[in-house]
Image (cartoon, rainbow, N blue to C red):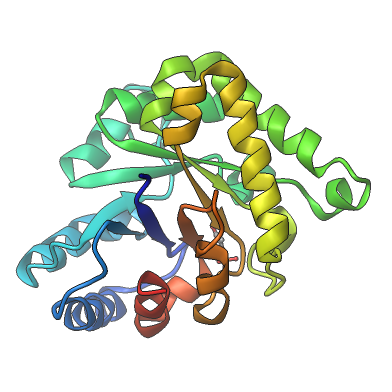
Length: 252
Ligand code: PEP
């Protein structure tokens, strides 16, 4: 049985003050208990990871793990501005997002870089959340499944068995931050296609890998999305900035 996982991605948002309020509200909301068999994490910007780790600890927020939004493709060395996976591990991260479409589009991150980052994250004993997804043009031209499965296949080629310790996030680019959520059936169909692509490599691995949906997940659409057979939770951007919305999605 795959656990349901909800991961908040704050992107480049937050401040020392607002982070404090967010963790306090989520801690209050979670202290009376959460549905069992689920996992929750939040990915603040790098400079706030230590603060959030301290706040999670001081509020005894055992339900919430910490994640990062990216990691370097390299282990250490002369890579100005990069943050090594081992540093994120030291700060208490359990998850690291790699290959988010904003990084693929704005920082020219190709599949090879995404796999190199995922390997660094795995080597530091954390879970990479590998994002894949098609653009609006690719979907409109009927190539969505081909594009997404090719992205998954490239990860399989490099990561092989180690994919068993990864999560995949299907994030249609046209749904990210746009309010245009994929219908539960459209998302389910793509999650199924991703699982079948993984099964070509290893059926057992395919049945165990968590595949999250991301793209305008909100409290009012999370229930329907999470009820689908191959949707194992969500990667939540905008809605995760509001602690009440994040809590509502975690409880969906
Ligand atoms: C994301 O950034 O991963 C994301 C899914 O964003 P949003 O929920 O705002 O669409």
